[in-house]
Length: 577
Image 1 (cartoon, one colour):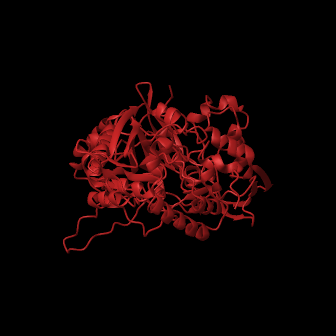
Image 2 (cartoon, one colour):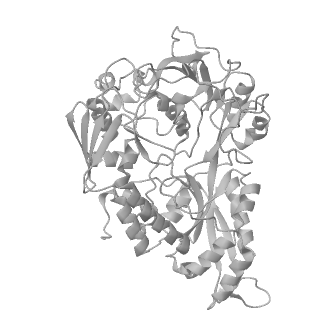
Image 3 (cartoon, helix red, strand yellow):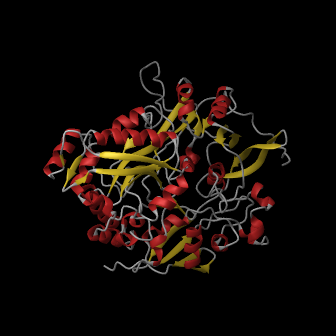
């Protein structure tokens, strides 16, 4: 298998060293709080019925209700998830499912994709959704005039798209790239609505606040109060190809902070809260009618070890890496620093997804075993005044950089404390987010680094950019892990469309990663969503973006007469500022 860089070597997730405050919950509530038992002791299961208004508090403000422009604004993505349809969608396991594209086929070489579009998809103004709309949207994704992620634009500029008829499309890639379906989750725009607007004018076009989509809900009006947009009102789309939603109307209201959102719930203005954060947790838990849904976020906190830095050559010893991992009391960090809002990590592929190897188990904290392992490798404490282990005159001492914020500082100090107990000396250095990436990771000048990987909006695992040996110089393999066998697994998985074969390759990769530990996975943070108990049908699996909480929104329903929530929007349209 060749190790030459492919065209797609740079396409995948963007590394974000997220400066995150602790979020959400002190304990795990997997799924919905069960209904109260009836007098006879059995649990009553309400029957879904149509009707009602669901109102949710979003943190932030509206920008543009346009899926090509919503990359940087979560509230826009939340609304767009209901307004627009997509070629392909992903279930909670990360497996691609039919949506606007009812089926597709992949050529034997993995470089050509043929898509058959649904014939019954309609825009909210009644016009049919056709291949022309898809091609038009892709043309915008290629445009240099729009504020899009550079890697996304470059990918679409490299893909040839051909229309066979109104409902059949072919996409030709420069070479096989199995994660390609990840890039087909963009919301499709109606060509007849946007074609007359030059790309450089789209960002400021009035259509961004009067959207027409093809999703389960259609735009009704902006909620304008005191001359400002305070919300967006949507109505169920009767002709949605996936079936009409049970709930008639969804109203999103904007708030400046989680505290303001919770107050809105307490005041009866909303039924749902976009996210429960640590600062509102105690008050939220005290609300008797508020149900909590908790799941893993597509993020991971880990410690990069620079295996290519000669100043810390002992890090190339996998026994040392294993001892460092065993010596970390991660559960204490979760309980006392992250307030229970994380799970111990087991590797670079997320649990609960199709590619995760289920036999992996979190490495337990075992300081005694860690010390014994270091002794076996002849890392010994020499002298009466030093507690630092050394071998061949080189002490087990290094510097760890970390993002300059309160949470990461507390984690770094806990790590330093745990490793000191093993006889490992760690100096800590806090640096701003931008400098950590530009001055340490990218030039590979660091020794160890505490970072967060944010892999949002990437259902396909594809660990290639972070761990393949060709990415050790100009790519994102910041650990400098140069392992041929691991690279072969990743190469084959990247060009194999068959999910079962890819799964086996990723299983092998994870087993090898667990043995080698080129980096030390620490935690997967959690996301908690809260909705009033009168809303039923919610199923929250692992999310790849917060808007995935609406994955089954068509099946949500109100289980009791609505007692709280914003008044139903007036049918008369309000003006916009």
